[in-house]
Structures are given as structure tokens and as C-alpha cells.
Length: 114
Image 1 (cartoon, rainbow, N blue to C red):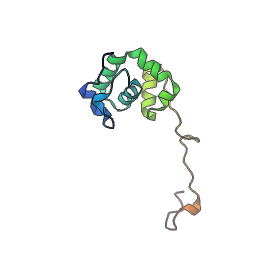
Image 2: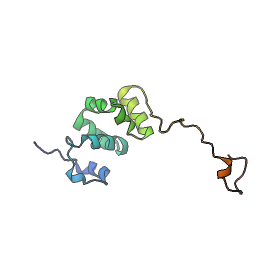
Image 3: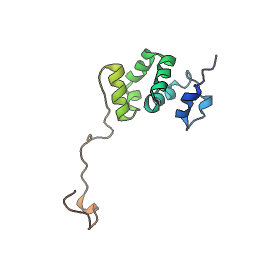
Image 4: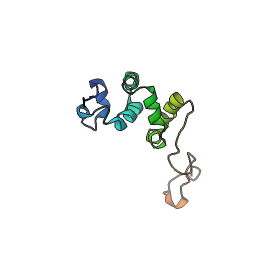
């Protein structure tokens, strides 16, 4: 089986890994979300040339894959590739303002803010 190494320009996105040892086919589950989340335009061009639009779209259709992306990135790529923006709530209760128990605040904290 022939190796499919990451191009040097894309390797910079994988600073937590031994990027020169990553294989585009074997490590697609790491490569696709990293490039979608952290890449720039040239990186995205490479990603879609390497895997194809359909493969990236199919990857994004798996709910746990889309949920692994940061919220704004998930919103953007689901809109671009699926035609409908999706954003997974990151905690129960949504994005509402969290209440702080009054006894958790120091005496000097202004009472009108909580």
C-alpha cells in the first residue's frame, strides 16, 4: 500500500502530532476535522482535492463528526456542504445566561450585576 503523506504546507496544522508520519488515507479521521477547523483557504483546497467534496460531505453527515468541530466551524461547513447550518448545543440549557448563587459572590461585588 502506497503512503499518502501530508504536504509540508498542511503539516503545520498538526503540531501536536508527528505530522510527517501522518497518512491521508489511514488518518482521515484526524486530518479532515483538523483541516476544516484550523486550515486556511489553501489548506481547504488541498483537502477537497485529496478527499473529494462527496467524501468530506459524507464525513460531515455523521453527527458525531460534525459535533467534534468548534461551533462556528460546524455552522459554516454544514451550511456550505449540507445546505443547512447546524450547531450542536455545547451544554444543556443552551446559550442562556447562567445565574450565579448570591452567596458565591464576594462582599465587594456590585449587587446589580448578578
